[in-house]
Length: 180
Length: 104
Image (tube, rainbow over all chains, first blue to last red; front, top):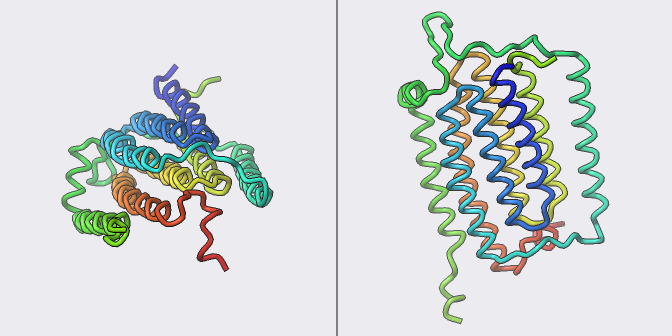
């Protein structure tokens, strides 16, 4: 049995279960911890696709930076368990049920058309013309990041600066509030 | 019979399932922070399909996009959580159905 098959099965089940835990837990901290587990499962899936750089960035940025920020805010606000409101709940439940039903119908139509085996993933090194794809190693990704994708890269750095300033301005306590 | 390698379709189906779990989370939850986490779930589902396509087509563009999506998600996390903090200071609540000052 191929290693990729075993790993994909494990990580796919783990990803779906942890995603379900994330959206169903009443306690926001439990939700956040499930989301961290979900990010690690996705890291495993990226590795089965030979995208090593993306996998490393996933752990660093998502499981590291973003989730620390989220857990910080949860602790700071001290929000307890979510109490479901009795009124106005039916519309939300109906919408969620409809979304789930549409997904099941769409997936069933895909599976019934029996696509398995048509789109085999190719080996991770391959030649297309004079373009050699080496999988998502840092060397390969970095070479493109600083040549073909240099403009979006610089634009993203500006965006991060803008977000930084925006977050400080939004979260800053106003001076009058502190005095009173 | 077990397949010997995983087809692209399995990754795409998994991505769709994760995306819909995120959508259902956004629709059903009241806590703004959990809604925010559900949005992260949806972003990650799209990232997974992009990496799968990148690996399938032998093209680095998909992984580039994932990198930029992660950068935008980090920016979104900072601003989004700052908004949640500012809202909590105003309304003493993070439940989105109690925040209706812009509702018609």
